[in-house]
Length: 311
Image (cartoon, rainbow, N blue to C red):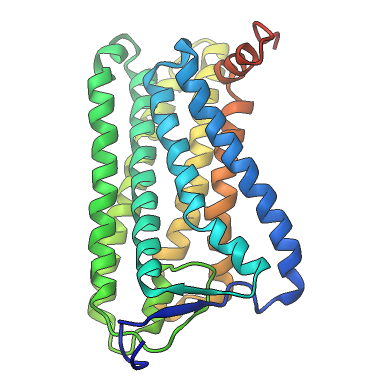
């Protein structure tokens, strides 16, 4: 870090939750518990989807992708935060910071697209049940998943590249990981043009998938309301309801954090919002999909050696 106005800095200091020293011990315990449950829950979903042949369907294929994403997503930030909360060393190298930013954005962007793929899967299942197996062919599902991953990587490459062209002043990041809005606040040059380009990239990555997902659910609701059987309507709403909860949690917190001007971004609030979508949402996903899913509970019961789930 030759001088304070250079982006070739050797390291940054992550302030984390040092502003609230009385909370650090409590946060360490809670985050460690949440992180452990998140890892266990998402690995369980991936394992069950692989082991039980009844779960070898498009829905659980995309759910496995989502669980793997959540596992990587939370792991890209939580170990760093736990070290920050418990230890004295709160530094991260410039290269490590850029790598963390790139990985975080790639995973978040990919998750946005995977949620769209899951919405399309539910749309095909509810609105075109007779043609579902033809539409959601395994080759098409794999191609769709690969496209989501490539799209996430490209979006992250663009945004990270834009950030790396800026000159940064200072070495202190008022956050617990290297997040985009904090980088922009460190810039020692006019960022209006960069912010405009980033806003376009974020809109494509966040708003467009959210609109496509909600559009799918509008069609799903219309189709469900046409079902005469009350039990049929309940089953259809139950299948899609859990996915819609996940979508609302993820997109809602992401849009709040990333689609507001940098000058209005509150670093204090931003930390807690980021805490929500980096640890709480990835924990909710396995809980929502397993506790409210008869097939998942049946598969778990079978793996545990207790036969068929009596419930």
